Every structure is written in structure tokens, then in C-alpha cells.
Image 1 (cartoon, rainbow, N blue to C red):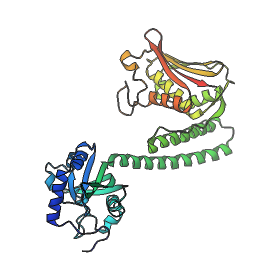
Image 2: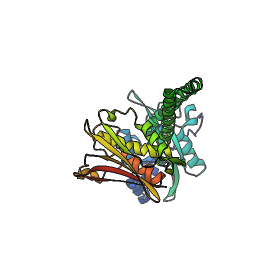
Image 3: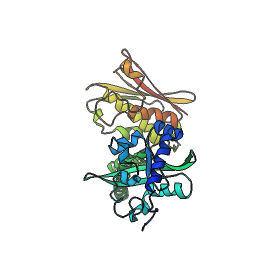
Image 4: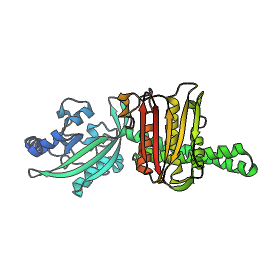
Length: 373
């Protein structure tokens, strides 16, 4: 029988029944199926399902495992391409680029584990859906027989958001590059225009912010390589001003500032430090009533500079232990729970600083970052 990729042959019926019996009696295979935390399927060397765990049954939406036994993986998942050839899953021209088929054949022919991404279009009773699976195929011998273990993880949502992020960052970078180019031309034509200089500085900061956010969003890790430079307190104050200027939390509120000697210098990543301070200031403003004020203080010592951002409102005791916990927020609405977490992350992991807060009903709340000189 013709095939574009994997062999078309299926196991003879009597031999297949013997395989089912062998699997059912194997303590090793049963232990694997019962303890696997995700989707696990066992195939014979003709890529037919001989056993599966309950997670896979849930994925298929069926109660009786008998419905899947004997099928190939794509057939059990209702792949739209599985029926486009007389020999079924693995043999059509679409299977040449199928991650699952490639991983299976590596396990069968080369006796080695392989992990691939499988992009699948499923048709279940007329309902078409795009599914993305992370497939790992691993050969195993148990009780004198050879099987192929298939671990599958549904990463459809992860891939969707990763692709959406990629498109977003690509488009916004193009827009910012164009805007910055126009500002450079305007700056050359009007070198003394303070408004152009201010806008140019804000766009430069936004470009840097997008670069940092892209790393965290696309790589999904918490690593960042700081870009330390020696900067005076006056530059840090200016960068903080750019970060918070125009924020809605500033409306009807005042910021009282004491920056001590502006010539004192720190070796720091200016973007990250101003971002941390910006989060502290915005949080303080959001906790302050209309007509109220917050205070920014800078206290130098022999080996460090401590930045303090104070507001009058105390943090309730039951929130205090979770302030720096990722995803935790005491404020309503989605998209929160990263501000205070990022203060701690950037400050202590990237800047080698100490970040903490003090709060009480009498003294209010003060967030602090102690940065080494």
C-alpha cells in the first residue's frame, strides 16, 4: 500500500489481541499508566494504540478505552488529514511534516527518544479546532516486548499567546522605530525645541521598556542581564519623572521630594531602577485619597543609597505577607499582581539591592530599595 512517510502496515488482528493481553498483564506498563501525571499513550511498532491512561480518555471525551484501541494517534484525535489516504494516519503527504509522526518514527526506527511540536487540525463531529501538542516519543522494552510511549501535552493556549506576543512586539517595534526616526529629523531641524527633546526622551524610554518586556514575555523566564552605568541621582530623578509623568494616578495628588545631593552617583541599570521606583510611586499614589500627597526620600550612606516612597495608607495585616507574591493583588480587575513582585525580582535579582516595606496604622506605608553604591 502506498505511503508518503511512515509504513502503512497494521498489526494482524490476532497478534494485536495478544498485544492487548500482554499490556494488560504487564505490571510495569500498568504502573506507568497509573502514575503518569499527564497524557500517556502506548503504541505498538505499527503505531497503533494498545493502552492509554484516563487523561487521554478525558482529552478525547470518551468513556470507553475500547473506542481508541487499534487506532493511530492522529485517528484517535480526529486529525482532518488522517483519512486523506487509504492507509490512514502517518501515511499521507501531510504526515511528512507532522511532529508526532516524525517523533514516533525516530523512536521506532532509530530506537531513540524524540520530542516535537504537533500542529493538528481536529474535526470532531463537524467542530473544527486547531490544536498544538508537545509530543515526546520514547521506546521502551517491557516483559520482552518493545513499545513506544507517547507523552502528550496540550500547549495550544501557550502557543496562541506566544504568537500573539510575537506579532504585537514586531508591530510595536516597527511603529516606535518609525516614530523615533521622525523625532530625530525634527530634533535636527529644531535643536532648541524642548518639547521635541522631552518627547524623544519618552520614546527612548518606551523602546527600552518594550525590549525588557519582550524578553520576559517571549522567553517566559525571569532572567535579565542588567546594563549598569554610573549615573548621578539627577539622572535617576529625571528617568523616574519620565516613567510617571501623565499617569492617571497623579490626578489631584502631590509628590513631595527630597533627593539630597544630586551629584551622588550609583552604578546601576537606570531603566530597571527607575521602573522599580515608578512602581513604588504609582502604587503609593493609587493608595492615596484625592488631595493627598506622597513622599519620595533619598538617604545616602557610606556604601549604599536608600530610596523611600511613603504614603499615609497602611497595608492590612492579612495582605502584608503576600505583597511580593507573584499574581497576588489586593486591587480589583485583571492584569494585576506583577507590580510589587517585579520590584522584588528586578531589585534583588538584577540590581543586587534589598527591597522591602514598612507599614502601620500610625506611620502609613513606606516601600524602600537599598541600592549599593
